Length: 431
Ligand SMILES: *[C@@H]1O[C@H](CO)[C@@H](O)[C@H](O)[C@H]1NC(C)=O
Ligand SMILES: *[C@@H]1O[C@H](CO)[C@@H](O)[C@H](O)[C@H]1NC(C)=O
Ligand SMILES: *[C@@H]1O[C@H](CO)[C@@H](O)[C@H](O)[C@H]1NC(C)=O
Image (cartoon, rainbow, N blue to C red):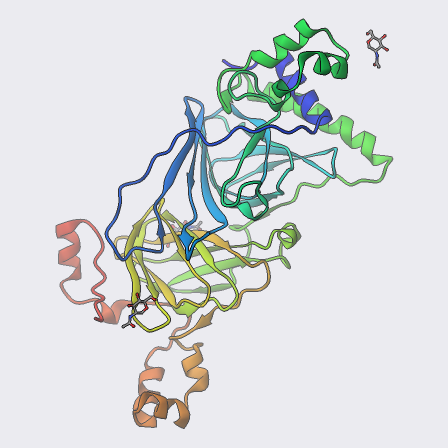
């Protein structure tokens, strides 16, 4: 068991008092198995940032395209029950999404104010670059799984992110240890030996077990109360700004699935981040109709189920047809047409980030609300070099919009193939 309450109290004290600067970087590298060619929009470079018995963090790195590193990485944090992610700040903006379990988050806002709140499944929370925070899994016997968008556009080193641990000791190393002992002793007004006790004790890693999360919980609550009363008379409000993706009414829903997108109008914390968040739940075999994001690049993580992601190059050739499973990360550059289809085995849920917090209005190419539908007429028929009647017949055949059933495109033997290879086969093969 890593952390005594005394030590916890001390580190927390430090967290509140000192903005300091030193760096602790990536630990070790781990690449996921290389996939086939043509899966260029799957992000497959996964890096283990750290792993302990209490938890781990893995980062899927954004791609380097045309010599430019994508500024967005996707982080996966797993915390066992009764664990604590040591206070730190990061040189990148984090958008946190709770995939499983629940936990408590605390962060410093407005320079000194401690903002705390309980996060539950489906919640989204933003931690700005440079803002110190901690995470706690106080769920009784549930793992806490967090997926986060890591936007490195403000980071020290382009395309990388850096943690600065405030708490800690030997491992992780607290940034405080970078100061001269005498300086620090004077700054704290304590003896060097007293400081030593505090600054070398921790060796449990970035995520540690706590004997009693409830105790730590009560203790941090006391702190909040203290801070609140201090700030009440200064008129600074203490608010916990998380946003629930699952509790909200879907933006779109039909028999084949539903979707929700959160932008700066829904969740003002996104205004400063330039990042939007979305979630899609497709029933088995359904597809998000071919569409385009005119204003944003999209990153997606498959939360449950499996399916197919298709992306098309500007010149009308296939850029990617990739089978994806739970945990896979994909991205789709702005303007590139794409669609996602759930396997016949079961629903596919995915969630992700768009690089624009403004309303991103996807343009659908197929379906009742598509741009083809809107444009249909003699001009479009001429463009396709067919009669207007033929074109109209084609366009009118699909009555649904946005999320479509894929039944007509699935050949009769699909169920059989499914049984044979245990993976989905959608029977799409246009080329
Ligand atoms: C430092 O600690 C001593 C003894 O506890 C106390 O008398 C003194 O006022 C403190 N100095 C400051 C600047 O806090
Ligand atoms: C997604 O849909 C499936 C059924 O199609 C359902 O079992 C699941 O709970 C849904 N997920 C969420 C987060 O609502
Ligand atoms: C289409 O564009 C891609 C990507 O730029 C390129 O690799 C491919 O060769 C092009 N194909 C044709 C037929 O122009």
